[in-house]
Length: 127
Image: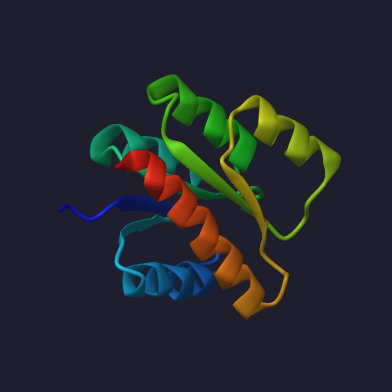
């Protein structure tokens, strides 16, 4: 069985590498990018099964990125990460069919557990 492909989008290199390594250890195939523009290209070129997207990105934020991703693939599972949850983020997340919303600053082990659970739920829909 092919590994589920996960696109991880975050502008913080240390966080990106840490979570990418964790996702790989869970048996998934991560692709890591640092911007919304790179994410849109990766969705177009690599057709990931799941996108894990930071809400706050420079230049093109997570919502604008997600809108462009939805133009390419309106079915891909998306998990939104944020250190700054707010009502607008939740509203747009629902409107753009986000599978899960995971707070970044809930403590590393709590965030990893929440993220793993969200990935597992999304992966069930991919199979």
